[in-house]
Image 1 (tube, rainbow, N blue to C red):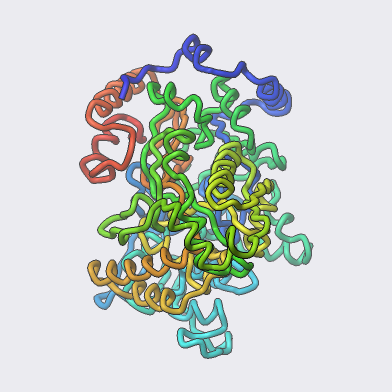
Image 2: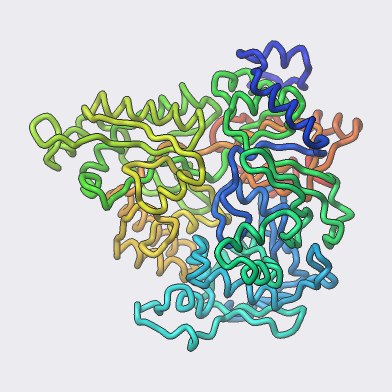
Length: 595
């Protein structure tokens, strides 16, 4: 890789292939006239669908929720490992079924109310309540009684009365929370670091519900009403514009929070966001970098793509003919030119994906061998299903995607592949984020652009998405054998035995193909080099609590460490040992993490 250079105004001007767009300057002027510039500004890419941790399930939502709330565990910026947050100590019983958490003393909500273990107990129950409809609820079925409360049925499918279910989550006093599991669960602490398990303030939520039974959700989460417990509070929200966060002076670790104000912008247009970054109006962009500039950006200090555990794929509505036939889905899978998408369109080190697990491995798990592009096999599969030149017409196939130049470009390439090689009539449907999510959830699509980024650092997170009872499935696909294997893997502690179960499950999924894997992600953070506390981790999960502006001496040290590391490590493709303790220590030594 070419040697990196510190960003300079002259080089920035030479970089842009498009003049600073008028829309970008207009946006910049609008921001400056309405509010003083925040200490830190990042582009969130879209309007968030919810600020309720239990209801949210997307990356844009997670970035804001992690600023507003904090749970028992959080993630460190380097490596992304789960570490205690509000849990000051954790004990595990000898049989590995009971966790005892002691809460950090003196923690209060942003309105001054004390935060107690009872808040966590109530929040667990609320997340599992079917009325909450949390897409994360299934992940908690490892907790005793959680499945029964969430579904009204036990593991055998027998109906149960909710009032007869004893949930294994109990506040034994204000500072002690006890959680009992159904079986030993090796990834349980990783689960606790997911933003969906952040507690919310019961009194304010219930008051909003009483005042406005129909519109309580928006009433409860509006600025001035939302009570949080994280490093920031919600100061202002302008739909399709920005969310302003202000430092929570009552946060238990407020002395370490450096940024007093943060803006999360909802800019969907990549060119506008990109221009605002180089105009100094935005300090961090995540993804959506114009592919035409990737090669030049790779020479800069503020752009450093790294592999992380995310999969870009297409969901297929398996309830809708002819997509209910696996042979049709196999034909679609086998004609996607993934190499063209990665090398000619994306260009930042993304790799073609043919399996459920990105990069084909995670931890000790390795995916089974998968089929790749096969044009003759695809045409034969379509003919075997009764379609094609000698069979029935397949009709118009529609690809649904959320607003993004990159999503549109990928959809155009895929549509061209299906049209050229399978003689299909393909149309594209673009929807803004909330409508796109609603349509996907209600199976109102043919094929839908999708992605999955790990909620926690365990490969099971990918497999759990596609069980029959997962709210995140959104394909209509069910397979009893797949479900059984995942259920057994959840309670299997031995890594080799667990991996064997998961490989069998992945083989089933890759044979029936309710999803069409396309590529494995790399992070595409374009971030001001002066930002400290901005970590590299396999989830690309950033916590604003740690952000700060480096002074000149630290900036110089960071630059030297970065240049030294670049001599050892290429930015393209998966890196052996990238997230090993040694590699993480080298990154911390680079000054990008708060001292």
